[in-house]
Length: 206
Image (tube, rainbow, N blue to C red; front, side, top):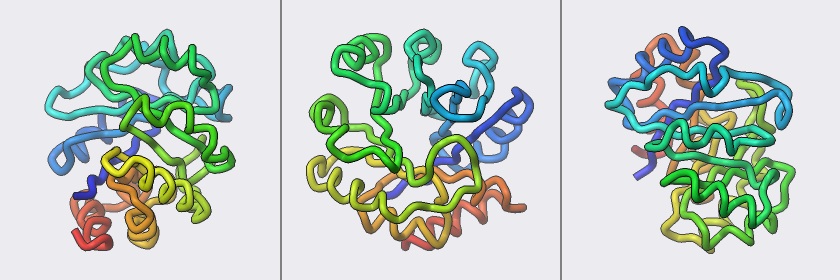
């Protein structure tokens, strides 16, 4: 089964809380983008500004940070996704020791070979289908080769695709091997949140 995960990029506590409340009745997990204005050219809420999160949902944090280590432990029960572009094997082991659930993200320009040292280290992967930093970007079809390769090597892994996901692109990502879809503007720009989520599910035969 493919899971639709609302992706939230917030610069204020009010916006974060409002978006969580909008999707809470319809999903089990929410994706929170964290940006430091260094690794990507945009900045979100600081980690210490994140309020107590609604306990009825599961959360994943995508750390688009050059140095995410000081913040991972603030959300011990969540899934943490760190970009392979900032990793080396020693740093990865130190990050793994900080949290219970951790996975790896990869950006569109980065070759698949960057993932190879970590393929046996986690079953959680995020393939970015836009260059991270801003919402409302167009899906990059070329990342599908990475998704296919990852699914071939890791048949039981969670492979999420995030960026430009909507009714037109979700079927492509799923056909390539994704079983989790992060969607932002396709959900939050819609007047009816439930309908937006249902439309994506219908597009993939859900």
